[in-house]
Amino acid sequence: MRIGVIVVMGLALSAGCAQKRSQPIARTATPPVASAVPPAVDPSAEQAAPEREKRPRLGEAAVYIDGKSVGVLRKQELPSKLTGKLVPIGEGYEAYRYGLMDYATSLGIDTKKLRAAHLYGGSRVALVDRAELTRLGADIQLSFSMGDRGKPRVHFPPKKLNINTTIDMLSGIAFYVDKEPPTLKDNVLVMPDGTTVEGKVPYAPEEQGNGTRVYVDGALVGTVKRKKLTNDLAVPGDASDAGPTKFSLVAYAGKLGVDAKRAKAIDLVAGDDVVAHLAADSVKGVTFSVPSRNRGQALVDVPGASGSASQPARISAIQIFVKTTPPVRNVVSLDDASEATPNAAAVGRGADDDQ
Figure 1 (spheres, one colour):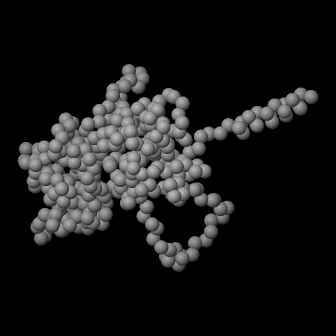
Figure 2: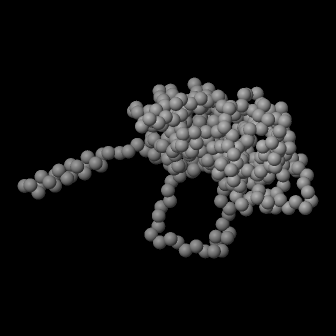
Figure 3: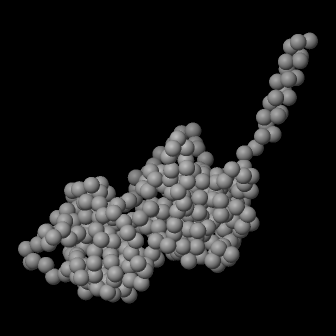
């Protein structure tokens, strides 16, 4: 009799557990079916295989609006008009947090027209639709893992959430205003026409890439790519110089429609650090190159203090302030900015990067 009772209780517990289901998690591609024995690869067939299609993917915490890249989530690359709130995080510590909707507004989005915000956390995607943005969007906050630096994070309010999943660390955000956002079907993200998203950034025409980003008054206007730098931007060098081609920063800005010589200031950013704050009269002779093995980023010849020799530094973002007042930020010495150090193989190489 006792054995029968135990069996019945076990079956009841198993049935109860089977009824528990987690919320669906968005996936950007259907996982491949594993085979017991990997098939043999024909070397000749492998050589004849066509080159894989380059698909737009989320780069370094990239942010998109309707598929257009508008920047990345780095503390030093937030729009200057975005202000954070200092909040207690326990044990006497405080940290700045930024409202998701405030961030959207600082990017020029009319939040009343915002259809959805998709928050990426690696392979997981939290889909926040218009209804949830209206209900609790103001309570969703962003921060950085090391206070004013580090990787971005998202904080959901301690309320009932009508979303498919939650994430912690952010690898990107996709806002949808004019375009219809992808939806969840059988736990997979699909476009409005029913096609699978398959890991790419919806509606993005090309990869965001790792090139140096250029902002004007907080708005992303371009990304430095070697293959798009024309000869008219090059600075004549010594015939004996075997190094990579040098380009004029002022001339490049002019190609983007910006008169850098009339800018109020230009900040050079390396990762989480501002390594130079240049006045308009000191930017005229600044040059840069895009050597290989430098993460696709520009190597800018940063002017030294008090007329001393310039020093090459790997720059992740160039911020030009023309109409807006430049923010007051600490300038970090190149020796103390680890992300400004170029790869040893990049300095003095004669071959330019082909990005």
